Image (cartoon, rainbow, N blue to C red; front, side, top):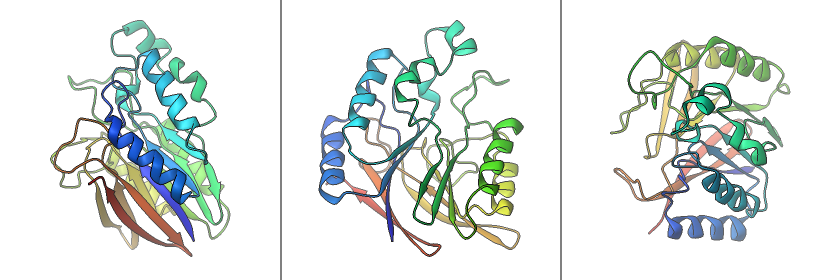
Length: 242
């Protein structure tokens, strides 16, 4: 059995120090096989925020994969957002959007952030065809029989939380991922956990969202997800800070 910790929306610059300390302590004591972070490491994509995130992730002592969130794109620098939106991730290069292979598990990234959108709220999700094609190719390259998990920041469809994603192209992307063989899509963004069995035709795909370890809580306390994955069976447990 593989134990995966799924955490999201840490928001260094607006982090909850007690929640981070709690999560770090749980990781060190329980030694999960890996940690998946589904975006928003930072609050405003400042260098000091990325430096703090890099130090924290490096101290966890286990394999980590990190997806990009909308808060991780430059906020105050339009030039950097347009032409070098992920430059400040350089020190995290070995973790950012990296496929992660565990025993019988294949974790693949899907970017849902956008530098620009033809709508006022750029915090919402968007899937472009190039990013989706790359993710589908990685799923195709997964070992036969592997449990495939896709990690992205925004929920691809709405899941009933108070926070919304309104991900453009999300429904079509979800259908394509399900048909390609993805068993679950792990996301963040809405700051509340969920676990939904969703059907695309004759294929079931789990939609699993993590809460937040920041001060920006919504309907639930700081939390993360613990996933148990065994022979294609996925169990999700929400671990909330008391």
